[in-house]
Length: 401
Ligand SMILES: *Cc1c(COP(=O)(O)O)cnc(C)c1O
Image (tube, rainbow, N blue to C red; front, top):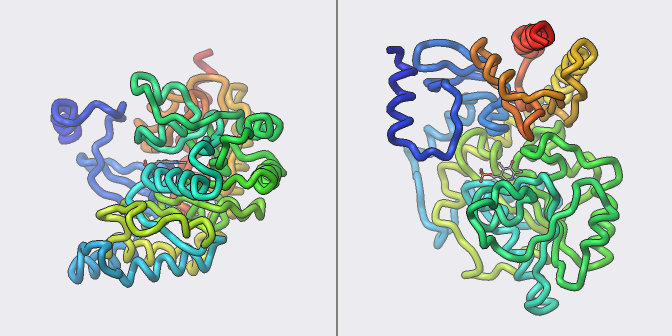
């Protein structure tokens, strides 16, 4: 029995059954590559689901972690933490925001945002104005609060009653959003590009129109940039493409270059609704992870990573569009920068499985969309290598038909 098979059997016997896992047991990573415990190499175009934006084990992130690990791992938020302060300053300097709350995941960042919009509204308009409008096909996390916010019936099944106070509208439909606004609504929460929902980019003018609607009704606008922030779309934050600033933005996945982190950023007037005791997190903003995030952001901002994302995003898009022209089962390419979705008219799962067998990691969202979120440091040669694995799979499928 291979090392992989043995680990898979042990995992199947001891790990909670929350994931349908592919038969890959990961041993190590470097750049855009992963190795399994039997020494096989894989080209990683999933990148931990848009976490490893700088590739695996970026040397500057690793060095920051090593140095901080030997200096101070953890201390309480009862005290001031220099790396946390520096990270907050840097995030504010590069965004619309004035203040940052740190936590440990995307779901937690969205929980913080949902608590903040409720408190901000309650202070101004009383207790009966608490509804948050979110989009159908959105994804905001897996806690009871964030499955309540997520506009997908499937994630709530078996977990009802969920948290009341959410209203879902079709993404991109401003008329539907306008109809959903009532006296009880306090905020709108959207992903500028829906990731899990099938890589859906906000149509031109939509975010602007949502901003105007929010302003007209004193609603707070929250952007969930957990997946598409931190350079994924070719700008530091996805909202910058539309020049529409939110009041609150959540970040997580790639922010620390690999290790777990979450952050909620807000404008001063909004952030002020949180007072001592309103919210907190034991590990949020700890020295270890915020040191890693400082190193990761420094690389992201100062080492040409965004330019590479734009250039390689354009190249990958072109290669995928060529694939659409040659194969009837591939319909269109959506996305921005290096979050790209290939819409198929067949199920994507068998293709993902075959790609893995041949050494390419991708995944499938919304059933028929192949999602490509490689490290933003990916090279042209690596994209060519990925397509050299992918294209024959389409040829085989066409031949099977
Ligand atoms: C991944 C994701 C989340 C949840 O993040 P976790 O760290 O898994 O809690 C929330 N929103 C979006 C848009 C995501 O992609």
